Length: 206
Image 1 (cartoon, rainbow, N blue to C red):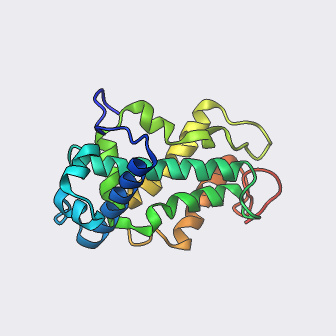
Image 2 (cartoon, one colour):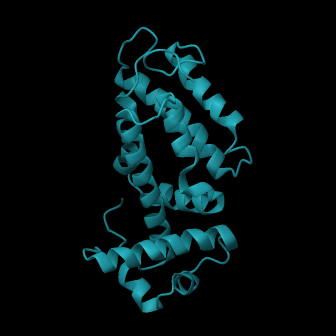
């Protein structure tokens, strides 16, 4: 993020963390139900069941709430991706499982997601955006079993995630469809030289 941290108080205590979680969840619900026009700190506080003063203890404005929502989901996705790369895909190919985890982020709340991602892109610095790709950059090998170079890993991750992000920001109605997921999986596998039915590492899987 830019030099100034937008969250005023670091929620150390369990009660404070719980309050922050409630506010962020209320914001996601409000955005999905009412869109940007109905989104303000008073409405978020009311939906969360907290006073406006309590909300302002942790978030100086509605933009800070949006950023917190985006960061919460980014952290959740990174944690899910690390688990999948460690062998938690339950029989599904890792590349497909990671793509599906990204597509299904924000619990399918597409309006909330678009606004939160827009806030993150506007406020986050380059290092934070790059960190969002996490360990996926070095997770895969090509069809010959060779680790990807730094540049190839960059191109692959940005191409696939760039398409997903564009679908989010443009409000594409196919974001959560299997057809879109299949195309993203095929894009990555073709780039790596795998058949479209391969899992990107090890024997082919769907």
